[in-house]
Every structure is written in C-alpha cells, then in structure tokens.
Image (tube, rainbow, N blue to C red; front, side, top):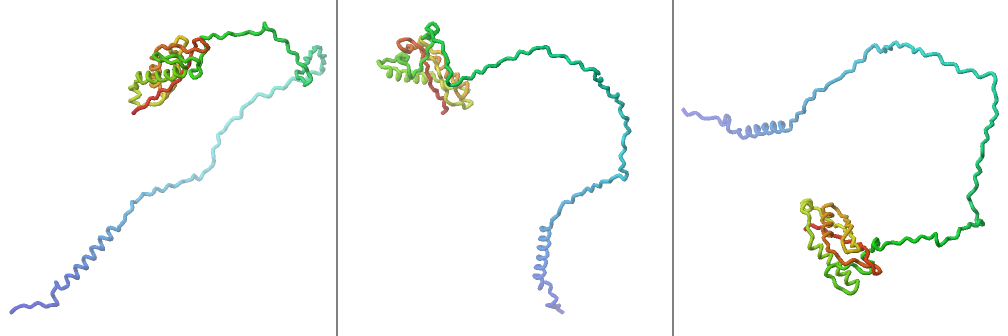
Length: 241
C-alpha cells in the first residue's frame, strides 16, 4: 500500500510567508536596538540646611574702662593787666615800577672801550661739504673746478666703500640689514676724525665705522684761503641677497 501526502499538510507551501514574517521581526528588533538611547545616571546630592531652634546670642561680659577724671583748666586771673605796645614797626614803602607812555628812559651812551671783540680761531671753523669754497681733494682726483673735484670726491668715496665693504658674519646669521648713516670730519690737516654712525644695529654701525676710518689722508678743504674742517655725511646700505 503506497502512502500519499495530503496537499493541505505540506509545510513547505507557506515557507516563503514564514521567512518574510521572520525577516520583518528581525529588522524591527534591530531598528529598535539602534534607536535605543541610554542616559547616564547621576547621583544627585541633596543638601539640607538645618537651623538651630535656639537663636539666642551669647554676649560676653565686658568691664567698663575706668578713665581718669578730666583736668580742670586754670581759672582766669581776677585782674587783667594791660601792657602798652612800645615796639615801633617800620613800614616799608614799595614804589611802583610801572611807567607810562610819556616817561623818558635815559640810556647811558655806549663807549668804544665797552665793546669786546672775540676772535674766532680758524682751526675751529667747521664748514659743510655742500657749501665749502674748496672741497677736500681725495688722492687721485684732478680737476680745475670745484664741481669736478666734488664729483670725483664722491666717486672715490663710493669706490672705497665697495672695496672695503664686508658684511658681518653675525649679522648675516641673524638676518640684520638696513641703512647706516655715517658723519665724519675732514680736519684742517686732511685726516678723518669724529666719526659718528646711526643705524638699525650696532654690528652694522661698527662695520661702517671701520670702513670710513680706513679712508686715506686728503688735501684739506679751504674757506677764504685757509684750511678748515669739513663735515661730510654718507649712507651705507647693508642688504642681504
């Protein structure tokens, strides 16, 4: 006898429906798990202030300070003696020093003996380079006019600076650069004196002073036919490339 299955009892017939239902339930559980939020629980501390029932303040017992009785001022004398003022006061008369328009002021005549003429030594005269009658002559400069000698002087100064210029190593390492203004005097013997420098750093000022101090002796400048001191100013630029 062969057994036959009832088509209504076939469990594989609704397996697809059960799979879908199970999948929906799993997705729902996963979604709720993802949306679940938890918050940390904080232990709140409740502080209570208890006030005492007895609010009576205990006042310490103090003793009063015993002060001495006030002194009684001396009584006024019964008889008041009147003394005459015998000292004489000399009054100082202050005369007015103001004058009006009609007052005549007398001026003492000036005598020739009262005039003192101070002689200025030519050695102490200092003339700027721009207005000197005869400019100092740099060694190697030749010219007949003052303008040509002045142009040659400035050219020789520039060549001297370029020849003796040395950038300080420390200034190179620190990146120091800038312009140094140098002022010096060519005295009445042609020597370089009174060198003054002003710049952004002491290292650059020291190098500029060294360059100018190395200038050769020159023929001194002349004013009215006499040798005088001549002041000259020149900028020296220190620039890193």
